[in-house]
Every structure is written in structure tokens, then in C-alpha cells.
Image: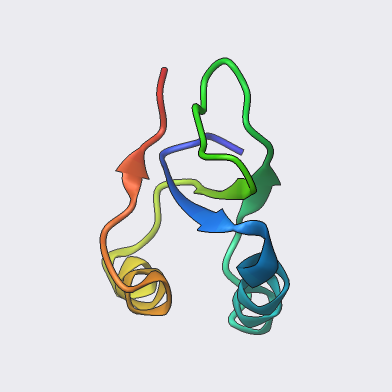
Length: 72
């Protein structure tokens, strides 16, 4: 999967968001903090490929805002 953008969320929110994305059949992966992703303590990243605008809008609504560009 080509990584385009991500959202950083608290670990406690991850399960609910994961279920919602799976229900909507939106492709994603979950990543831990790394050299590329400098996340706050207790956070994970939901990483997405480029999405159709309509699908991106659904993701944006779910996460309540725009995602951050995934570092190259």
C-alpha cells in the first residue's frame, strides 16, 4: 500500500476507529511511532493510501479534520 496521509490518535480510540473503517471497507494500516512518524506517547497512526475524494471526505468526517501528509 502506498502511504499518502495519516491521523495520529490515542491508543484508546484505535479499536473503535478500526471497526468503523473496516465496516466502510476503507483501506488503512496502523503504525506505531517510528523514525518516520514522530507520534506522541500513547498514540498510533492510521495510515491511508490516496483515496477518491468521496471516500476521503468520509475519513475526514470520521477523524474530524484533515490528515497529515505521510513523510517520504
